[in-house]
Length: 536
Image (cartoon, rainbow, N blue to C red; front, top):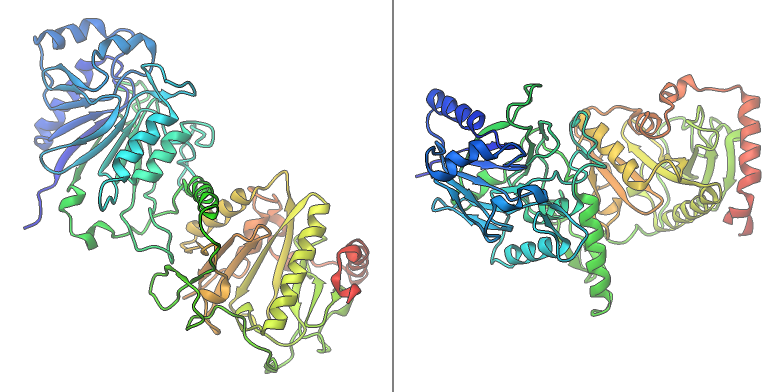
């Protein structure tokens, strides 16, 4: 028999308005039935708390529901919390403590962290430090078979929680909140995370706690920020929900992914932490090569043993012949040769016709290959040389490149290479723009594992869309139905990146042949010091 769900209320900053809060709770329970508990985040006490609080503290009044609160966020309210390890403040009102895990008789697990972030060590009584967060993480992550917690309570928002998500309105999630709280949320994987302090209501779309194609599915997390009690703007400050403790749920039910699930907003933070751990491990272990195992439905890293898998580029073979005229086979009369700016042994560079920018170029195989996954090893090697040369070339001009390929409704491989300013677009900005705009169009764009490449996640003949930054970071979408033909270009042309929306469609950017030839000559001249093909 399935466990009965618990009915829970969560509340934002109370700021001493106990009568308003508990009056609202009584009204809700009168209409909707009894709830099991009330969880309060943010400022429970305020500057005018004394009169109302005195009646509850003396026992003259009683909270209508078991109420659990976080500690002080400023020096003025520290005196309301006599015991840092947690205590009963009044009948039915419990201070959880500075940090820890509350486990109810039902099996519900609630992690909590009181106060605001401090750089000082030790932190003031109303704050938490990096050490506090590290100790809380260690105590929970060391639990055998730890999968996450049911609920996380913090007063500050986590920094960057709005990444890949719906708008947080007037709150700038890139500047607001605590990085330590982000780190805590990324590690503890709460099913629900409540916060306050910003006097705003924000219910973020649920986000993943696993990396698709790399890890087995895990439960999703939901972040909800709540406004202050009795606010005149009528912003939501009470949130009602039902929850079955994680430990009592069917595992398959627990990890179901809702349709509106997004990427994890703390992905950058997690990646930085993983790199830090990897550098420490590198000092202790010999280097190992890993490959992405496609024999599994969801991949895991495995040591290369020379057996199975598609870990090596294909050996030399004659490329297939086009079934009709091809605009990109170099020997074809259809090729617009005035756009060609470099010719190697197996590949060539050409300016894009109707380019997004004057230095928008294509890497193309000389022979007829449909996609990267069809290339022979010597062609792959020369593609890599062109990537390196273009990276060096664009970096000399204060730019980084974004490369993408659409293996869909095309017959000849075209690697589109578009430069963006270094000081305007960080790799995270670029990835966020691609992933966010993909989500808006119901396109699942996934990051390819660090030690893998496109040939390990797509078989020949598989339609796909693929993005690569000059840092080596990659995004991948397996096309299973219709796909917008100009998607890659539209993302780069968007206001978030190059701010050239009028140039999103190449057909609107066509230039006269003489202008195209002049642009090609200028590119050829500037690229010459970096062109390995001229030194061959």
